[in-house]
Structure formats: C-alpha cells, structure tokens
Length: 127
Image (cartoon, rainbow, N blue to C red; front, side, top):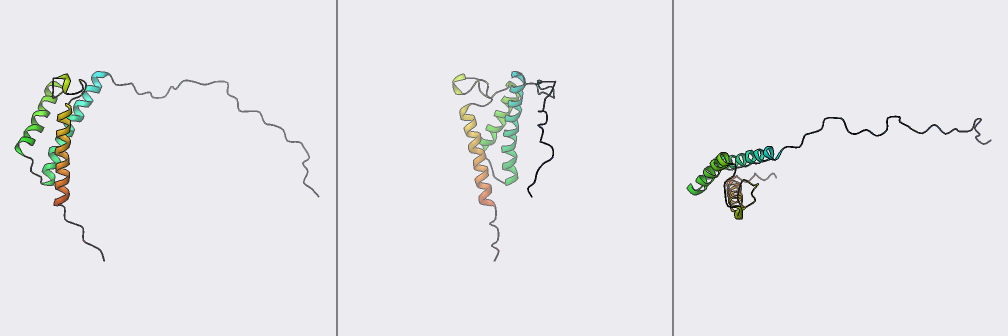
C-alpha cells in the first residue's frame, strides 16, 4: 500500500513585508574630518617614536647618540608643527615624516629587533 495524502499540499503565502527596504538607521559612524585624521596621524607617529625608544631600553639595546637625538628631535617637531619636515619634495604633505625619516625609523626599529633576538638565550632542547 503506497503512501497517499488525503489533502493536497497547499503553497504557503510567500514572505512579504509591508515595510519595504529601509535605509540603515542604526548607529552610523561619522567620518572623521581631515583635521581629525591629521591629529590621529600625528598621535600615531609620536606613539611609534616612543615605542621605538622604549623597546630599545627594554631590550637593553644601546641606541647611538645620533639615533636617540633623531627620535627626540623628530618627536618634538611632530608635536610642535604637526610634521617633521617642511619640503614637499621630501614626502607627502599630509604625512608626518619624510620618506627618509620614515626609512631611518624603520632601520632603528629593525636594529633593536635583531639585537634583541641575538641577546635572547636559546630555548633548551627538550629530549
């Protein structure tokens, strides 16, 4: 005996909404103004300079006198003037560091990282 259904299947009504599509009314983040973006970039640059100096001190890496002076002077100029260079040929005008200053900061951070890795004792072999 086969399975037979007593009543035929009826299609249920499709999902309909009377409201239609609404625009998003939730919390919408306001885009930061160019001035706010510039201040955020300045703060990020100062934090990066502080971090480079702090990491060198924590890892026991001695920065040369020139490198320490470079970090301090660039930090001072960013805090005072909003950027550390004035010549538009040396970097982006909306940037805080010139191309060479950014490269030198990257080299200092790399120096700290490699010297710190050399100073770390090797983990003992587990046998």
